[in-house]
Length: 242
Image (cartoon, rainbow, N blue to C red; front, top):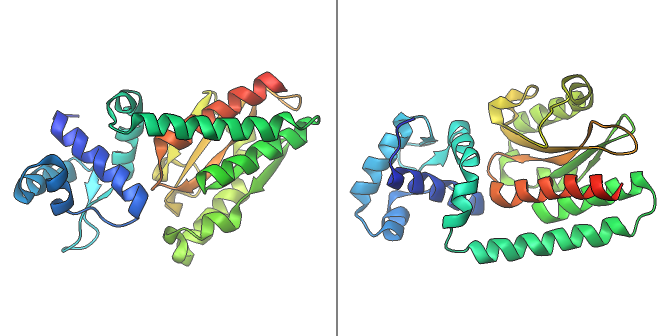
C-alpha cells in the first residue's frame, strides 16, 4: 500500500484521537498538530480515504478510522511505539497495569481463580469485556462496562455482540488460533462480523489445556498499543505461574 510518512502519521493521530474522544477528527485539529493549513490536511485525508483507511461518517464531519485503517495501525505498532512523544507515559501506564495484574493473580492458589482474577484485572484496566477459557467453559466479565461505551447505544450492535459471544467458545475450541497474540478487527471477526468490535486474545498453556485463551472484546475504537500489550503480557504471565 502506497502511503507517505506524513499520511501514516496523520492516520495514527486520527486513530489515537478518536480512541480518546469517540468523535470524528477534523482537519483544523490536525492542522494545528502538524503546523500546516487545514486545506493541506484535507488533501491528505482525501488520499487516506481513497485508500480505504479512514471514512467520513457525515458530509460536514471529520474522519474516523475504518477496519482497514485499524489493521494498518496494528500491523505497524512496533515502529509506532518508539516514535510516540509520550512513550514514557505509555510505558509507565503499562507497568502500573502489569503490576496490578501480578498482585491480583499471584494471591490465588487455584488455577481457575487465578485466571478469573486476571480477566477481572483486564476489564478494569481496559474498559472492555474480559474473557478466558477455563476447563472448556468460557468465563466472561465486564459485560455492563462494555455496553456503557458510546458505540453500543445502537441495539443492533448490542445484538451482534451477543451473537458473537454466544458462538465464541465453540469457535475457539474448533479454530484454536495458534498465535501467542491474535487480533481480529471488525469484519475480520469470524463470527459477529457486523458487531464492529475487536477481539484481542492471547493463547497460553494452563492445567486445563495447551490451548487456553485470555483476552478482551471491545469496540474497534480503543488504545491498541496499551490493550494488546496488556493481553500479551497476561497470557505469558499465566503460562509461567500456572
